Structure formats: structure tokens, C-alpha cells
Length: 210
Image 1 (cartoon, rainbow, N blue to C red):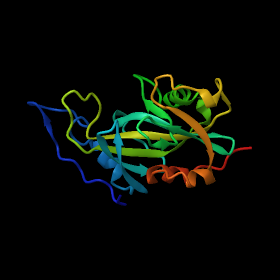
Image 2: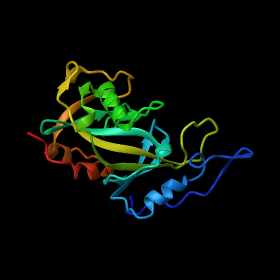
Image 3: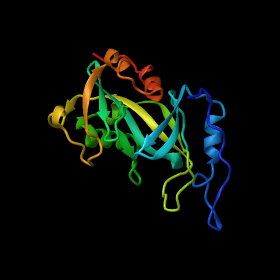
Image 4: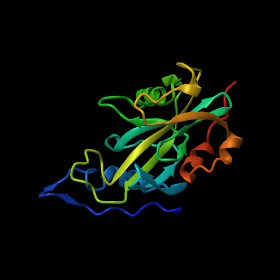
């Protein structure tokens, strides 16, 4: 872990063709975004057992280059508790979410993904932007990788959930990824051993409403 941003990635070619910015080379909009910002926390994570990424947390809203925002996540509050999800590869996390569908607005993605993964229902007008994650693949771009590489972004929101579509204790992720979720207080979260990138956003959560 370090308190500094990752170094810029060199411009790469894919076969005999030069890829568009953000696909094999660093997007110029990313340099403009990060040049005056310092991450609050940096972690290395592993997806799917073998896919390593460096992740930097920026808990402050900012205009993001849309081409690099691949996913939207949301910290969901239920009263004075927070939804904590469990993934099949072990780590628990506080931000259900996922990939944007073609033409989908950020807030619509957050609402849809929260419902699919947890069953909790949130209103788009209640969503509050907290900041973003900058993720960078450690390994070179695979030939068949259709998403931005080596860098991409995830937008982080928070919102209260007012009700559940069924029974939250037995809800199953519609797409089968999340293994379940539970509700924890802030005090319980501090004892849960969450990664620094998650704590960076939990620390700036607004107080729960009445």
C-alpha cells in the first residue's frame, strides 16, 4: 500500500494497429483528472482468483471521462446500518454495483445493480456521489479484452434504501455473483477488517436521515 498514485503507463500497440486512447494506452482525460488529486488509500486486489489490479480511492466527487467509467457502485444505508456483501472469492465489500449497460445513466446503473445484487430498493433522486475508484490492471491487456485497459474508473454513490423487494436475509443475486449480504452498523464495520479503499468512503458518509 502506498499513499501515492500509480505511475503513468506507456503507450502500447495492439498487433499492428494503435488503439484508441484508454484501450492499451492511458486515456488523456485520466491524466487531467488525476494531476491535481491525491488518493486517500491504495490497495492491490485480486479478482476471480488470479486477476490483479491496483486500486486507488478518491473520496470526492469529480467530473469523470465517461469512456473510462465501466461500473457504478453504491454504499447502501438501511437506517443506521450498511449493506455488506459477500463474494464467492472471499472478500466482503460495502458497495454493490456493476457494469453499465449501453446508454445507461450512472444513477440508473446504481439503482438496477443494487436491486439485482441485494434486493434493496433505492430511488435515483436519493443517490449522492461520494467519489471514484481508479483501477489499473497489473498485467498486459489480453487480446480479447473488450474494456478499457490498463486504467478504468468506478463511480461511487451512497443512498438510503427504504424497503426490500422480498426478504433481505434470503435474497439471491439475480446474476449469481454475490453470495449474500448482511446489515452492519458503522461500529461493526470498523471491526470487520475492510480494505483501506472501502474505509476511505465509509469515513465520509453523511449522517443517516431521520
